[in-house]
Image 1 (spheres, helix red, strand yellow):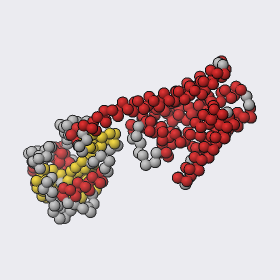
Image 2: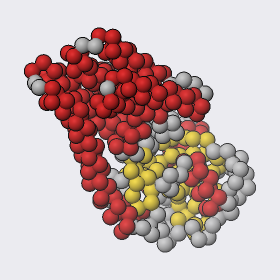
Image 3: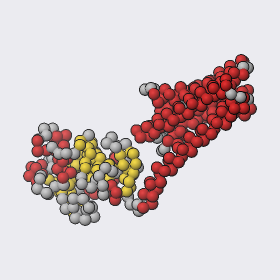
Image 4: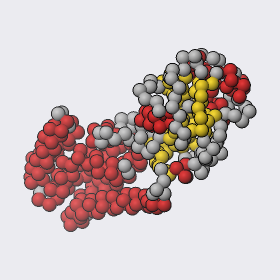
Length: 376
């Protein structure tokens, strides 16, 4: 979801005020007040039907319109009438300014209400904040220009500044946002066309938040494209650890002994779903209880992975998928210790082995167990 989509989604909360500004400019304060009031009431009713609760922001917006319109009608003053659009826009500035320049982010609170089911990432919040800053200065500058025109310019000039210029500025703002979105999405569309037949992975930050996606070939061809993977260590009742021997056809570490289950999380797939899928595909495991052990960043010469590490108990010998794995068997811990550093085990498993001993058996880490991978 880009900034333009976010702003569109937040528009319902401001709709009565926007309707009032437009109707007031076209048909006068009385008609504008009635139209905006009807709009606010309809929005309130619709929100109550959907959410079973009154939308306090729409209610506040509607009451503000009634107050502003009522004062304008009572005073019937030309100067107040001319300043009214500036006052209304300064209200917008207040909301935006508090959201951007204080810990109380009103717009972010609105986003959680109007964008239910959408988890805003850090990058999206930052993009929305940049848009709010731009809108803050647009509204502030336009409000000050209206105030100047109310006292120092002709009625025709004031009419254009308070009406037509408002829509021109907004149209220019959304046009710029749309062009920026098109420019950013251009390379993505070309990339998707070039790798249309490839498997795609989500690109994440170190906390696992999705920040993009990329095809498998690129993820396995360069460092920096951090993508999530799952590892499952399978142990029996005798504390032996099941290892799989990687197929000689594998691109990475062929022919070496590795973690029982390892695989990528597909784009849009949860870690839990990927773990169940990979365990079933590689070892035929079903209805197992996996316990999380660690999460860490692993970087090899050709890729960057965010590894979600789990452990499970299994008394029966897993059924190895011959298409994925050369062979598999349970290893005693002493045998694994003896094989470390001899090119028999994958470097990734050698890194995870002491974590497993520490988390499952409570062993203290040894100096020889330290690696350069960053554990989270």
